[in-house]
Length: 362
Image (cartoon, rainbow, N blue to C red; front, side, top):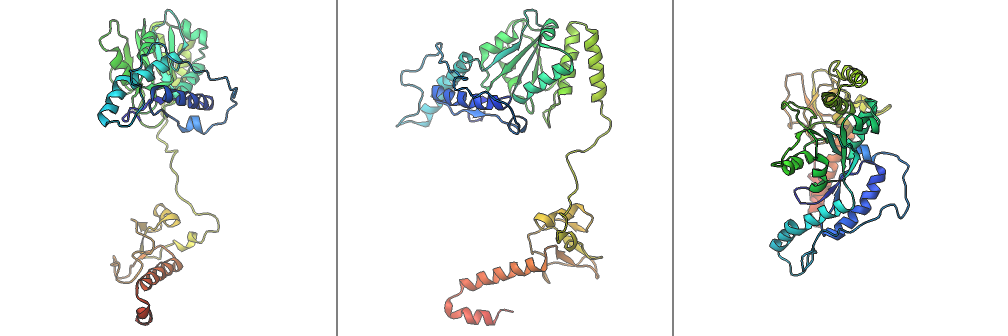
């Protein structure tokens, strides 16, 4: 979506998926842009109580954006060059103005004496809230510690005025976002060259080491530790230090355990449970579906092949005098595959040659 220059909204739950859906329609109509919504399993595959008041989402139109004389919409005739110029010169600015006017990006926790800022969005915003809860920091306590939190609704393009207001007076900004950097790179570009620009960390820490890895998922413990360490640099707090040590101990790797993988198994009563057993001295190539599972079941099965392949004499060469190569598909499946192939060949023949073709088929 970013490569196609499509504004992207990032909801942090079921309620915002619905709200941002309505906002996305309005944003698209105002800016004449396609608008996308980032949805991940943590926000989509969820159950929630939501507000469905028809007046819940109130759209406001910006007053600080000036439309070009001929508008923003595509028209006939319209050249690709004109569309590109309109997108770069006007449409994205219209999207930024719309986001600013409708408070898509907002301050969640603020303090006039804040020194550390956390900018986040979507699912990561929920992780930040969990991290604060794990640290025992309510909203008031977090503000007293010098923390400011900024929740971004439109993650691309990042609205610059709100971002600069968020960064004002901060010494350090912690960017919390899952996967690759999107907000962090935009924020650094916007802050570059400004006086008293805060230090920005996210994917890497102050020393250039990995902080929030781009692969897999972020854990709220990681976020809590990162926030606590930087808050304690600003102001010492004994209770927060104790919480930090507890989280560090809990977060210490106890050894590598692969919890995402498991070996295959056959359903109870499935005929493939026995039909995929390879005779001693034989080697099988994997098929598809259930037949593929035997690759990790110590049944002398390796590689892959189409269903029925390597099953007929002359199609495979034995590895040893007493060994054979066979497909692990059943006899019925192999026969059916051959029958369908032969029948297809017969259908290609002229009616007058059908009898002769059948009589010469072994």
